[in-house]
Length: 224
Ligand code: DX5
Ligand code: ZN
View 1: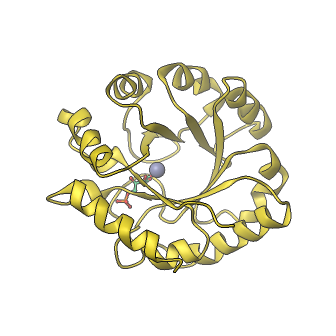
View 2 (view 1 turned 60 degrees about the vertical axis):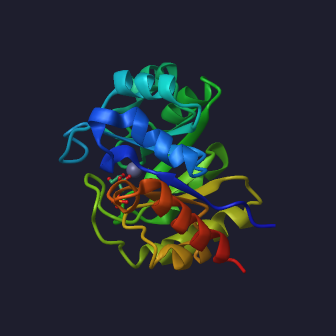
């Protein structure tokens, strides 16, 4: 049986001067997840937010906080983000010195652990960790910035990830992040994505609530 597909609005494209209000707009539309992008200026050429802002978001909403770390040495920051209120912490396989240790550290906080691959990293790189994680994030743009175009070969990577998870009979969510829009959302969903991150399409819209609803409707129709 296929799982319920979800859109995770990324606050990267939101108005940071009224973050709480912006999150409420998608909450009102039925969003269950808020995707929070953390960048350090080293792993990616951009800087965003740290644990203090995650803590503020936690005080503003009960949504599932899906924290996406695009940082070097993630092991050093897991405690801080977990204490700030993350429900899931995803880190990059390319960034971690000891991938297993980071997974263990996240799990020690009784929250979900996610592992991500950049566009140039093969799905197979995650194979040895797949039975220890809750979420597998396939980046469909080069991490660092919102508003980029979806990289088409991500569809193949999603299928590969799905095969890996199904053949192991595992309960791992497949997430995709970058360039998701109303035109490609159904194809991406059919390729195997269960959590679809969308930033600029939603928070760049005049009416984020309505845009979320429209994209959610397309998503629910994609498996009929
Ligand atoms: C990019 C981030 C994404 C970003 C997606 O590095 O990880 O979460 O917000 O933005 P859009 O939906 O605009 O591609
Ligand atoms: Zn992200």
